[in-house]
Image (cartoon, rainbow over all chains, first blue to last red; front, side, top):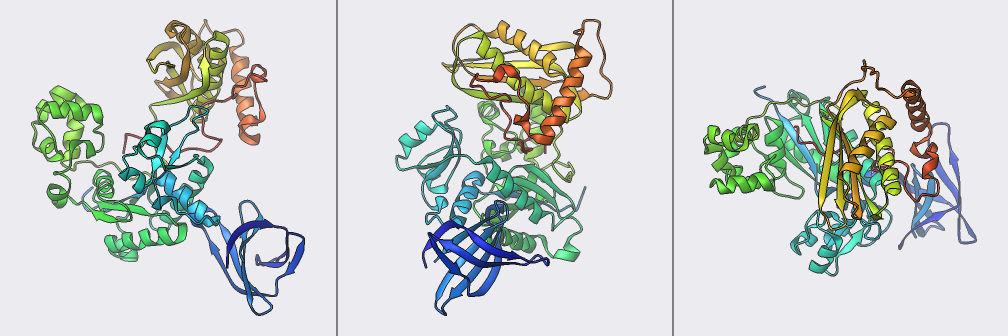
Length: 79
Length: 417
């Protein structure tokens, strides 16, 4: 996997319980649907809170999405 | 105050390591802490000094406070990053949040330092040293930067302990360890001994902290006045101030200064800069619910010569225009007409603003000005400092409120523990 940290347009579900789930995002012009979330964790490096999602598509392509709480931006962190 | 356990938590190369962690979080492959790097001001706006440097940069001889140009000469491959004050405040707050989980008495001492009173917490959280190790590792894992923790029975010794060996260490410095760990250190390593005091001490044949501790306190007092007794006590580890929860700093004065991006050569520009500084200083003064009775202006010329003037007011004030007018008069008296690169404004002689003495010499619009200040403060606190700007600053190219650091409350270093 390569580190990209690229801001992406995202469709996500913000549940009333406080849970966040990424659903679909765009890499360039190509839409990508999130198939499965393998792992979710949050990080607070340098006091900057990010919620991280390790996802998998087609049973093989693993990538990492991050939601930055302060800026409310989604990043495709690794692919 | 016997039997206290005080910890001093100090972030290693704070500004630089915070930037390094932030960069790593954003996917940068290089850790600034592992290469010769420094946080430096912008040379174009002449704020070009080194604010923090990495350990490899330190090995190249780069010093905090020297100019970027000097640092680049010593270490040509030095990587410079600009300061990011909002990031520092975020990191500082995250650190304080963690510390507050360990004790109800945590005092933020500066943006990257805090005292934690661990007295009585042993029952719940375990031995101080093992807790400090866990805390240090937790901060590293969770927030990404390393800290030094000093443990002792008072704030002074805890602070001295955390300075011992860096980075990422826990040190103890209890009174019985002073002789071995603190006394062999050079006098400059003692808190409150700066370059000038060190020079005076060295002239007296005092070179180590141990020498201060064994010196005649009468002689120290004779040579250095009350400061001599203070450092004598510090050298013997005597200090008993309490850990004040929150961010506590006994305030003696409020000041702001700014290096101007260009040399000031005309009165109008100088007045604008003074007004801009008066805005910031007076706003901070009112926010602290104080008024001042002494106003001081300092000038640094383009050839780095400095001069300053101060005046005691007839009656204490906290009105922006009152402060500005006195500052402008002081500036006119002090200025010799040479190009100016740096102007500072400081108010001291603080007193509560509960009752302010009126004077027959007050400006007829004095009450109106006070009302105006209050209204402007309210608008600025609600909508930001830039929401309301005096018309004279429009198109002047000068910031309307110089000297402050954003709109955030910036914890600064204090000489009082």
